[in-house]
Picture 1 (cartoon, rainbow, N blue to C red):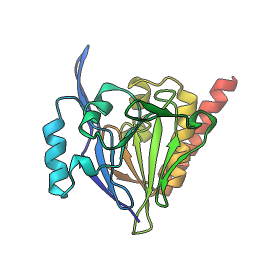
Picture 2: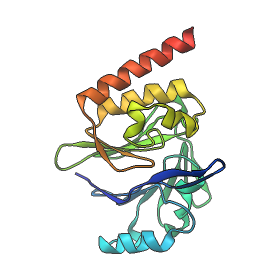
Picture 3: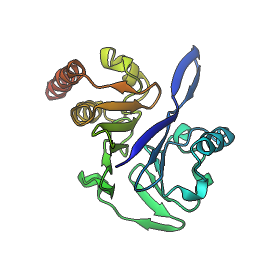
Picture 4: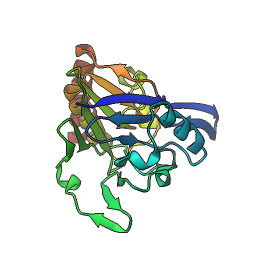
Length: 215
C-alpha cells in the first residue's frame, strides 16, 4: 500500500484589490510507485528537491508527475522529473508521446492497486484528483483546487471566487470525492479530515446547486 506525505501546504491570500500571494500544495506518494502531485511555481525547484531529499528520493525515481490541472502554480517544476510519465489534467504523456485516456468520459486512470486518478472537472474542465489508499486503510484525496481549503466548505464563495469553469460540476465532484475520502489535501490549505458533517453539507450544497441550474 501507499503512503502520502504533504511536502508543502498550499496557501492563498489577497494582498490588494488586484494582487494575491498563492502557491499550491505539493504532495509525495510512495509505495508501488513514487508520485509527486502538483509541483508548485517555477521558483520552487530547490524547495522541492530539498523536501524529496529528506525522504531519500531522487527526481529520477519519480514514476508519475500529476498536475491536478494546468495552472502555473501546479506545473512549475514538472521538468525536474524527466523519467516520469506526466499527467496534467486530462493529458497523459511521456516525452513527445501522448496517450489517449478517456478522462472526458468519466474513466479513472489506474496507477496501481492503491492509487487511481479520477476526473473531477469544475475548477477547470480537465481537473483530476489523485485518490490513494494507504497502508492504514484510509483513503486520501489529493484534489488540487477542487477544494481550495477546508474553510470553503462552510463558505462556498471561497472556491467560487477562486475561479470555476463549471460550478455545478465542481460542486457535484466535491461531494463525490468527500464520499470516497477519509482525508483531503486541498489546493491551497492544509490536509483535513472528512467528517460525516462535511459529507452531509456537501451533499446539500450539491443538491442546491443542481436545483439552481434547473431553475
